[in-house]
Image (cartoon, rainbow, N blue to C red):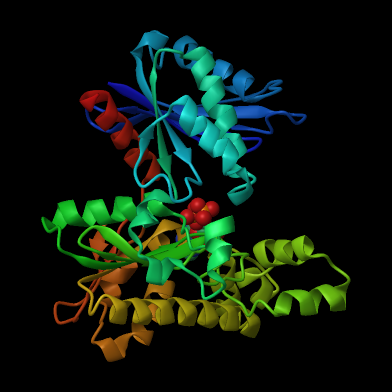
Length: 395
Ligand code: ADP
């Protein structure tokens, strides 16, 4: 059973081909600059890497090249070996609470929800249509980034603004990174053999969000109407006082979209440090005595700590705090600082276990810590492939 998992952007397409017998990745790759000049692709398989610059005018060209290459490189013997295609979809509004088989209705909804994810939903539709054309009889499944957060209740998803903004325009917290938060929840549930866990999951990559999870269901999350809110991130500000926006518009002679662009692309770690959005650079800066890097790091850890503390109260305690994604999986100084900030909750980590847990599943708290702390590598593509397999086997 072989399943392709696809993550499409407006000019890119990432894929992983899984053999679902053992959940092994047989091939993976990235097609870039689709529809722009100098488009190229990389395909990795069996320890090899193929790279080529080739004209790709649209997503259909990319998908055709991808499938041709899978066969010509003998990664699969024919296209009939592909049993399913799983698509990472971004915005399903409040209609999609679970993964779905992709139908005309789903494509129409993705198009209708374009305003909510202007870069991602149209790209998802392009990739779906391309695969439909080339593999018309293969089942396609969509896994929404927003779906896991649909269990959040009104009290948490509504903003304290006029009700009509929600009823008329859909203004509410949607949350993102849901596929990752769900993957971590399912991994911990299965590894620990318990479905009654209270988990505070910290997905800290370039983008970042925390979720509070109880009995496998999300009850709160930090991202909101868009991915801009919640914690400070690599280049995003996270929560700010919204009155800053018109104030800066006036001072800088910018329009609202230009200010939002700065909040998305020039803020966060980058904005506070004035150096970099990459945690590795920030840590290097701290080692070299850069006080702005230290401030950015401390501020980042403080904001994450405060959300953990808030979710700890909301969950009435926690069994697990888990760290995942680029920073969460790989940066022991980040985890150490956040956990030190939480010591009044009886949370203690073992420094050597923390330092050894580099990108791998590990418990890093001490035996007497009142909450267990884990590093859990995320794998959104695998979850998408598993959901696709589920539909193939159950329909
Ligand atoms: P995205 O949100 O783009 O999916 P990732 O989850 O891949 O991001 O995380 C990327 C970030 O992870 C980088 O910007 C970098 O800050 C951080 N990162 C990766 N490796 C390390 C490391 N060894 N130490 C600290 N931070 C790291």
